[in-house]
Length: 467
Image (cartoon, rainbow, N blue to C red; front, side, top):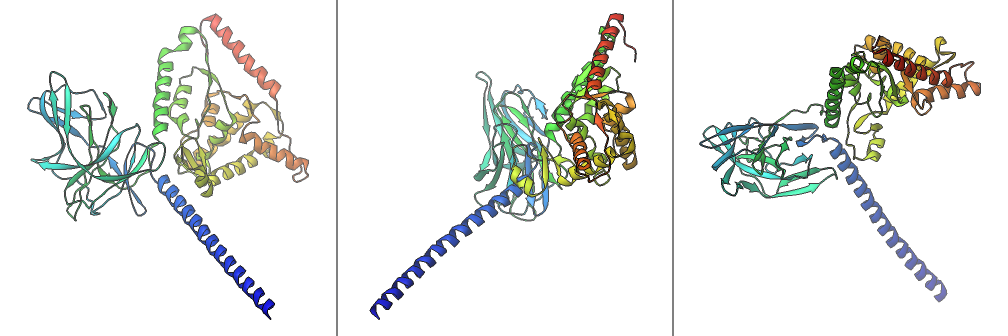
């Protein structure tokens, strides 16, 4: 009996130990689950904030964007409008940084509002209280010592909490205490002689009459301003805009230099990167092609593949949007989003593009051996038909077909156009489809490229270009 009692005691002890371990395990599992849920929620929160420099606020499902506002430095001797990019004003004595109107058009009733600030540079930032006075709001007082050129800036800051959300300059900020009703500004300051205005916002707190205002604080006497929230709108692709501006500038320089007239030979243009997926081809590449100075294009299979996305029947309302380039790719994968640099789109876009290309490559006119230039010219015909049918802007392949500009691809097998052909080839080999005879003639394509170069040399010797 005693031995049985001892066994029972040990069993009971083991049971308690097991129960204790299970309790610890369950607690750790719950903590991990909570951490993962919090991390997922944070990833979703970050993805809702545009990557353009500026100030934003989330209100339920709505994104509020704070626009750029005009601010002026005001003194007895000068009143200079400070907008996007300006040099340091030369001032002496006392001045004020002001915004028009005693009250903002925007109202915030939350006593401790949360803001998201996306910086383009390593800025300092914060919330300041502004003072309504005779038709303006004074953001800060500025005093310039004329001999030493020392600038003293006096403002009324609000104590805030901050949290860095990403490594590329996205912060969350909110006041430590409840804000009394009044006029406020969310602002950033870049210590530089020159600055580009970025989105900054301001607000008023404490009741239904609280107003929202925004101002960018002085930067060593450089001023810029931002104000007023609006309803959400699709974020502009800032990095894409930069590329478009540079591309247009380059295209304009080539156009204006008239290289064909000066050198007597055409241009061969080599391009790579997310040119079509980002829309840059419509911004600057196609206008350059239309000048008539480009003999042919050398690019990648991916550029030709992504050129078809916007003309797909199910995706005519531009399916491509901006995503953080240094964001959470795992989170994007969970949501079925494909990322190309800072461009994102649903995985269904690729699947529908593959269906389109598979159907195209199965057409009778493609069942032969041909060069890649002929393949892409034929694709241009079909892309053009899709674009016209769906009322979307002409793409690269359609434009090249219209202008008679050949498209060469140095590595045709390294892209999804050819991978769709490879799929059909494998299906035919496996007996899943009766026939598939498309084949790329790389020898003829290389010979064709050489012929264009030879033709260009002849044009150069003749001293003129005939198109």
